[in-house]
Image 1: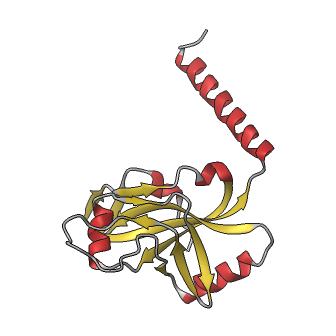
Image 2 (image 1 turned 120 degrees about the vertical axis):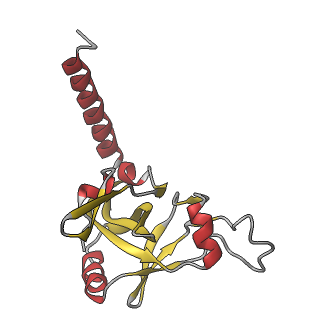
Length: 175
């Protein structure tokens, strides 16, 4: 299932009744800012996360980091690896808690088969992008990405600077 660009909008629509539309603001818990700089994202996917109770509370406190994390496939299952979820501060002492343990991603079988087929292509990897709340569930948005070379990164920086300059000129800030 591909995730439409609506995830970056500030409004999700939930249809409770046909005559009533309710808007809900998604809460973003963590963002991997480096992912779009280092990778060219070809497709995005959405998956649930299998977490323990104290991890859910810790994520809702926004004590989570996706920096340096990645998605791996082991057999017919997908795992979020190296994502740091700090222990919940009100949970008391936790024996043998590993904040960077692998966490299982909840995907449909056809999505997993599609990902396995796409990852067989050379140079493609799965990169986590966002950790957010959707309908009181914690979801992970991850992308199928191709690594950028150094000159690609420079090109993207130049394009971004040119777009900013054009926007400023259109607003009349620079003559």
